[in-house]
Image (cartoon, rainbow, N blue to C red; front, side):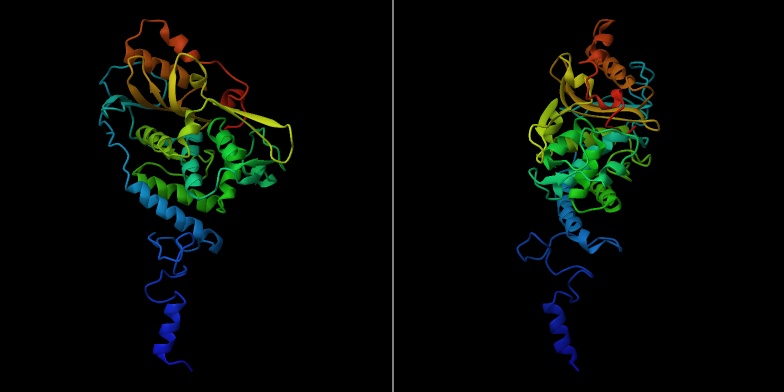
Length: 359
């Protein structure tokens, strides 16, 4: 029988001593054998296969928390009081980026369903999970069945680069692409959503809650102010910034020569010549209504971030964005219709065509 001192020494060598987190190895992968700086705050029940990825994401969460988002306020009352444009969105928020001044807001602190704006958080978690852009990812039947009543240009059995799937997820709001990206991290839906919520807490997005990566879950909610900050966080991420600034992206299947897919922005304002869109994401479900977050540059050069939640009718978000811009720029009457038209509907305008987004 081993004496207590010898037993304690063996436990320490095995990384199971009192200084090691229970149920985790003494050093995490990717640290060259050095002790992990990530907090051991994983809840009970984490599958062993997911532990390494979640600890890796915990370090990214810590980094994110050290780079705070702008301290954009949530007004206690509507801004301007009793004025502003007549909006159809249930809640809205617009802020001048250079000064942090809230130019207009209504119910900006109320958590509401955000539909596919969710994909911004899913993309950040995926990007920090360590999956390389050139990683081949096969579309499986489970990716098709993960999201119901939506269509996709991505064929079951087809293999694509992960970075190309990211473009389809963020530009065309493709749910099948989003499900495949989630799967490529090694996390299942439960733990991927848990990682999304933990990132929201690290960023200070206290109203944000997530139940799935696509936005179909009606429990995916955030306030208009936090939705605006979510876009800001995604747009400053080095792997996501160029994707969110793009209008379209053409790529090919890896397993079938000559087959190409074009992912186009589901935001018609980004496709037209009347707007300078720096980054955007649309969303729509029957529960959430029509949603839009967008960074845009006004005619006088000011950059603003706006969030529109809960507009009734898919096109109402564009009308509201046009009303906001005409109001901020004091444009002549009649300019709103031109601004709302943007680039018009396109074949990949997922929400207007009824394909590819959370419907």
